Length: 366
Image (cartoon, rainbow, N blue to C red; front, side, top):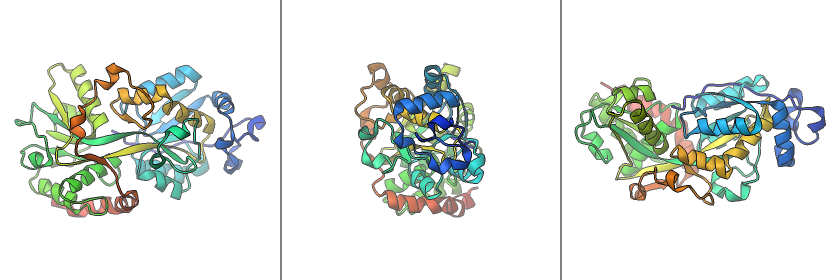
């Protein structure tokens, strides 16, 4: 899962490149990546030679292949620390000029939060015009690279009748896993998807809370650590995941055990789609390496890599190879899925959803 922990940054750029944009730790506010050419950024990134990311683990949306190609192409070493979107922003802010991380991946709702907390460094990339307006900050403080749709993975060895809807799950007799609604974007959107299925929306998640409270009252809400390993072991019957995670896990489970039997579906009543955005740490020690990473993520190759990990690329001008496109769920599954329609309302809701989850759902768990 995207667990995200906190860490690293600051600037160790050569004096010759200060005018172009990079600066020393003490002068981090002078950094202006948008004033630099791509050639300048690439040259300095190679000088920096390192990149540390937050919440971009190998098993999430095929980041592993992206990072390998990035390292092979530019000779820049990379390491990631997994954590939630909230933990990531908190780390950037708390560490400040003692930063340990250079770039991170946050849920769409957390992009504006990162800007409000003043922990971002703008960089638009050369693909700026190919990014929809809704998927980017005006200055490039955050840019969505891909998006997913809330789905459900089912362990068919445990679940006797495979569900296809929220209602089916409610009437089941197996454990249901959602994740940490207090900290994880994925878990929060599972609640929003349920709310929409039962008449709610971005400003009214009560139907979603009511839905999961019923499951909690039945003693079926799993409150254990939300991990891929626990899903694979059969400790839960169904789990709410972004489609790219669910499909990726299913593939890995079958690779590990040919007898594994997992299915993935988009709830028939409704579902929600949202993006994940890269943010570059304002205090990064390797700002040009971070900018170059964002550049690669939004390139044709980077977008195809994300699709290989079952994520939907943000650039619709990238043609996916047939073998990649054929691995995705059928389009009919997405008939009742939609993007967030009122981002401002959802941003406000997201601020209190963790507390409401504890008070109105977890408190009723049997």
